[in-house]
Length: 117
Length: 115
Image (cartoon, rainbow over all chains, first blue to last red; front, side):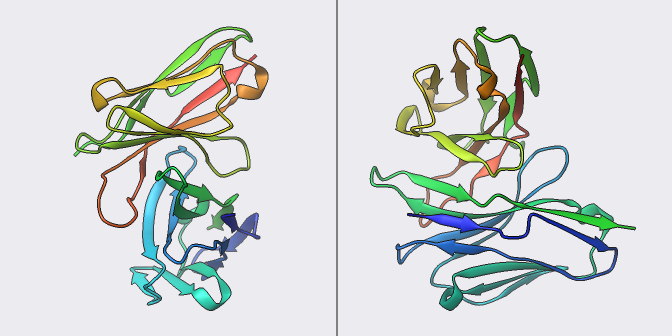
């Protein structure tokens, strides 16, 4: 069965600190996709990144970076020099194809990040 | 390019009443999803449409829930005889069918409170 685990329920940092959000996934599929979404207090899930299982290159986008390691089934997310605006709940998700041919996202429980000034 | 919109944003109802939510996807997107999110949890899949066809329903979707997507455009999610356990955020997402996994873009959600 597909599963996503975000062991860190809440993290609190001071502005300008670096912070890493952990994500561990389980799947038997050889082809799958991993996602990170941000959910600010307003409630809307904001797409951050999509990574397929064949591409293990790390990715950097501004202050955000992602480390994908198939050997440990992890897809960790690092925010460098955190800012107050980064405060949100961050979700890691796994996409897979169901028996019926539909595509489904399975989410972790999320990590609430609070960046204090 | 407008994003996914949902209406209403908040709904308070009494137990036993029926409620209906609307989702307008990104205009060119042919896939539409409904999720439910309770406090402290990630979104859970409810149902999925490709164009107007409802292709999959979660076991979470009891007989009291029904979803439609007439003409493959907007979608509605109706809950009949609401129960307190239905209180949650209902999220809609849309995507464009393409190669590999689609990226689902989410709306702001409808927060339902059942008294």
